[in-house]
Image 1 (cartoon, rainbow, N blue to C red):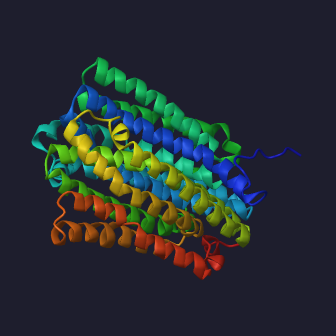
Image 2 (cartoon, rainbow, N blue to C red):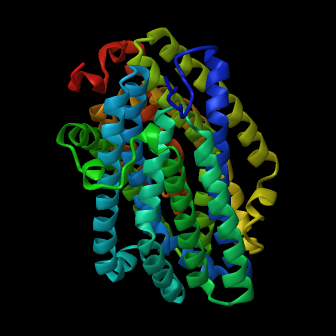
Image 3 (cartoon, rainbow, N blue to C red):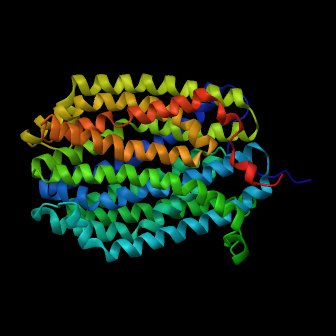
Amino acid sequence: MTQVKRVGRDLTQGSVLKGLILFALPIILANLIQQLYSMVDLMVIGQFVGNAGTSGVSIGGEVSDFLTPVATAFATAGQIVIAQLAGAKRQSEQKEVTGSFLTLMMAISVGFMVVILLMRAPLLNALNCPPEAYSQAMDYLIITTIGLPFIFGYNAVCGILRGMGDSRRPLLFIVIAATANIFLDLLLVAVIPLEAAGTAIATVASQLASFIAAFVCMYKNKEVFGLEFNRKFFKIRKEPTLIIVKLGLPQAARSILVRISMLWVNASVNAYGLVESSTNAIGNKLQKFLEIYSQSLSQAGGAMVGQNLGAKAHDRAKKTVYWTCITCVIFASFVSLLVYFFPKQVFGIFTTDAAVLEMGVTYLFIMIIHFFASAVTSSFQCMVIGVGNATLNFVIGIMDGIICKIGLSLIFVNLMIMGVYGYFWGTALSRIIPGIICIAYFCGGTWKNATVLKAKKA
């Protein structure tokens, strides 16, 4: 009898801490590299084009930055279902989910692409793009929008793999993308002066490379995924699709609300001028980069929790959350010390402008609060992710995206008359209340009887 080839790790066995770290490390490296090559765009454009290019790439990239979390949200939804099925050893259902999931992700991406291309001018106007950066922003927006199907396709395959306990292959995909992006960035901006358009072409080409690598991986392991190039495999099946949509929509709504709040903050900051716009653009990149560990552990913890809940190993799921929190807080402490003692050196990676550097120091000091809040919130949120609690994810999105970030910013700017710094404080404090909600859910214990597998027949 031929042994069936396995993809991924069984996260329901062995040491919890060791399993979490081994599974999380490739995710951390993948997200680190992804943010690194994203930051390379800003570094190259800043050095060779200047503030107008920096602002143009940042503002033009707001839409793709807005939709990438949507792709991640639906990828997480697929990951939740597949992780719980993998933990419950229900392989046949797992293969059915895979085909429906891939088709759904591509359909969503094409829909977004068409809408954005039609609405490109109103979108840039709504973002208060500075006139001197408008053409750069428009070029970047159009080109990166064409790459949306590659972003959604790549995230779909990574969600499937991580749900099955494989975090190493997604790391390989992102290494391929990063290599292509850095080479093309230097070629199309530093050598061939295409400015923001060159950076956008490099970004889309790298996304295409990672998507192709991901799909080739599936093809080489087609017996595990059940991959077949026919209508039957890619058919959208009602039952698994409804489960993914039910999980994905609230998570996407949560991501959208968070991004809407950030777009509002960014548009408000952009109205202050080019120095403030550039400071905020660089600060946003740094914030994402310095919080990679917390976000990665949340992804890893969510998959690990999902498999253990599918296997009804509740104690292991609980320990996963504890260890995630401990490691995230340790790393947040390291990051905070780094930006406290070396703020100009950190911000100076992206700019030599004295005014931007001065404002950047204050930005980083304020964000120390955000680093710790995100560390704790992300840790306990991995239980919400692993369970697939769509309603709570939506509530968290409302709190984080609207009530906290926008509400606090308005208070600091209008009532406390803090000017542009009020937006930085609003962002820094926005995750505290969502964190309290996640901790309360974890301590309540209702997650022990809440899995998406109840919607499936045994």
